[in-house]
Image (cartoon, rainbow, N blue to C red; front, side):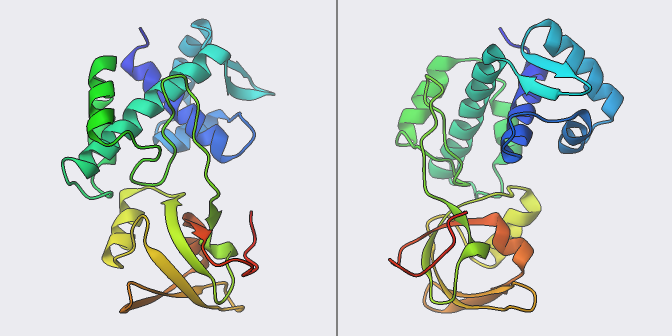
Length: 229
């Protein structure tokens, strides 16, 4: 059985490496993500390497082995199923569930995960729009692109976020922007890339390019010219 401390690192390695789309990461990137000192991270990596869960060299960086990848997806499944259960069944906000799921995912009971997965409606995506691996480790696919890549006149649907920190989610919550909300892109400002949107009939906002880059959408208007990146 994988230790709780190992699960934390495996999930972090997966998250950081897949976000860079190169399937590997470095000690400095991992330390930053985990908010730990590099020497502390290095000691844990030595253990993970000895357990054949990762490969690591100074020149090639850190990568999950086949076994490590499988275990990482199992941890991610537990975490995202718990987040979904907390939002759908327990009625927490999407900005409240990450830390709770961090604690609950340490319960090693496949039967419990199966039960709350069913109670949550057998979801394919978590409250932040991230895909939930199935029991075989297969991830569902979706066509998502940053709001930043949209164009004026685009009608779109919020499918998720790249940034799931409490600060960012609290910001979106204050703006009353959430998953599955319909947005209308009124204008893209060429000066700084900020995006003016209208939504829910009565609300409007001007989002900075930094914020627009973190909101993932799918275009619902055919032929609008959005960049699929």
